[in-house]
Image (cartoon, rainbow, N blue to C red):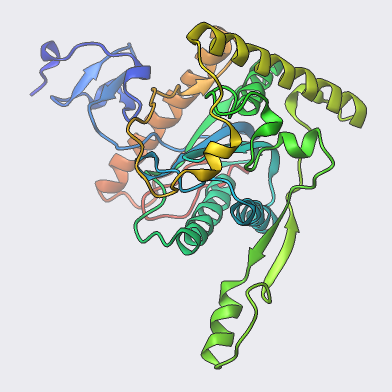
Length: 350
């Protein structure tokens, strides 16, 4: 029995975990919001993974459990992070144009071909980095609060520049340091504006385990390999002439530092400072963790944002229709390209 009168229209931004299905699938648990689509209340815990055909830039965010500063910078932690990032890129090649690792979360600016490429890369990176963090910190619980968030950025130059500037502003935006270069942790600015390579250590724990099983003793870095993250030109500096790239990146850094200084002055606050950051307890739970709802897409104009949403709604509708047929026993059901069908292989875009 349909009971539409008890449902109230809701906006997508307030239902990050909701899914859109065709109007023909409306029942007592659904709420109509458009002529051809409706939103399913609490139907899924996460959004379907969606990358537009042809690939897209994505902004990836992952947060530590309870906001604990398990990523607190140190010489060893910085080497581990860059090594794990370089190893994941070596196994699952994709473009990395920016990254920033704070104590309780990190951001990555990536360009991916499809959802499967992103999934494999992030699975390897997050799982291996988590194990190394547990080794280093003596931590026995899980490291990440939930699965990473990957938000598609439109192909508009202004939208990509804004997201690059946002990642570059990490550490000064939060009032931790006065200048981005003062951040003692892993940050892409050290490699784009300095001579420091994005180089870290990758530890082959499989070889260590085999050697340990044979009763051999070995030094800590015997099975460590030095790897380098390959950086792609940032969106704000294409075409990638080296001098023009450094100049435009420096302009972005100066802009975000000036904005952060204005905010600190308005709030009458001083930066925490690198020394205080290095002295914090990596396993202590913070008193407050700032949270905010994440958008479905990043775009510079309403028109492009609407186009991306419409494409996603159509993608979800096709996926839900195929899932219903599969549940009903239809074997030759076709899922939309670029999707992860339940208990079936990824559907390639080609």
